[in-house]
Image (tube, rainbow, N blue to C red; front, top):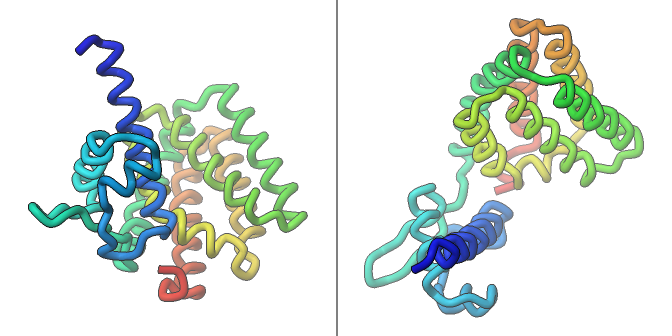
Length: 222
């Protein structure tokens, strides 16, 4: 197989993987739903091979369990998983904010502030779907600004794992206003090169998110 053929095959598998992963994390599939290679392949217009490869990759990620001679089945994110993810995120987001303070560029600061200004605008307008997108973007930009490929990868995955929870709770009570204010405070600390303050605020931000979810009730989401 040529390098180009290998690249195209990997790209195809990657697209199939991302689609199945999104369908699992968005809640399209229920726990223990069988993921049939032929049906998924037909839906996506691909052969069974990239589907099979994608399912194996998802098994390594813990989102699928494969039973030999039977099939592949969905492993949903559980309430315990969500709680664990947010506790771990509270520590890693703090580290991320600290490293971002040390490594962020002027261009990254400008991008972060632009996202924040848009968030403040859409908060006033009550545009919650747009706020969900901007919340994700703010954190993604902060992850990249930290300058660590590994930390970026871990936090991005955690962020994806709880997207269904985030989408449903972002408009709960006055959380949008508080969350945007917390983002502003984190940004100002990063801009001021106050690593200790940035780390503290980032950890508190995630802890407040946990509290909001607990009030909402995970049983209403998962």
